[in-house]
Image 1 (spheres, rainbow over the protein chains, first blue to last red):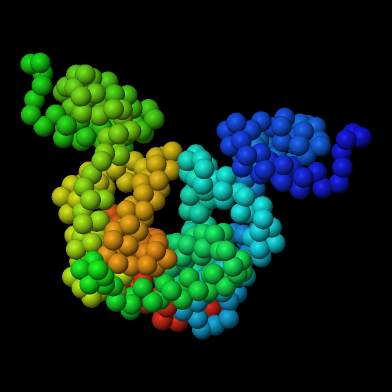
Image 2: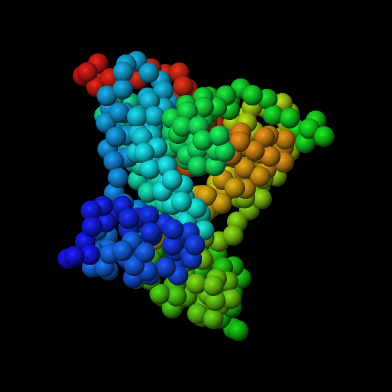
Length: 195
Length: 195
């Protein structure tokens, strides 16, 4: 017990992310994570079921998104509701930006983790769909808006992760959702014209 | 060799889909599929690597989508290009509507197959992204348009699968892409107003 220290969970996360990034997710063991964090393996298992759960912890995102969708001011177009809700949820990531960036790099390097990430996004689509219906949207529009909203969020998130200027996620969300509107307007040049 | 018959592949597909639907994907064996199709297991393996490949065969979708995107008439908004390309690709599914509907039911019942299906959709996003860039679209707009386009296609596809009136996939694609444009305009009622 003498090895237990405050914020062991935070140190475990940091240690895991560094090791996944250095050695790859598959090659990293729980023993190594615990050692780097200065705790026992038993302490690791007090906080996480396994090494994958460090990357896929339950977080407040779905709850914040659903609540902000249902309670957004009225009247708003569906994509405005979603923009509002995503911006409300942005601090979930902003507050731990460095860990989030490391996590994305780890996931990008591992197809199995990418599958898990896609499943998580699919469950966010369902959450948003239900919240939009609770707001009074018909089910067909809610299903479409939820798919489109999470697709745009995915792009906004990737832009934020890769942004050399480190603009906020909220700003990327607003810009990406605005750009979505312009997809129906901006003319596309043909290859012939482009050359 | 006497047991070989023309269109063994088609009969294997039909037999597999019926068995997956009746017994579930996991409980079905290759031996059962072959028996129902009236061929040997060896014939099954001449056409498919395993029982999962019956559901995830390489098809013309990605090629048709890419080609129609690059060659679409000019000038068109990005989502118009995508609508055109998806409608060009619709016959890939229309031509085998019954098998496609059975396939979706099988996939909907199996989380592991859903993961594989999501991976396939993710690879379609990449295909469309590259084709839009080849058309002259900047990479940021292409990435967003590809995500939004495939998200809308997913919804159009689900609507087609579930459509009691059996309208064409092409029609669902057009209606869903049109509805995507309206997501920025239509007002949403709050729960208080809806009641």
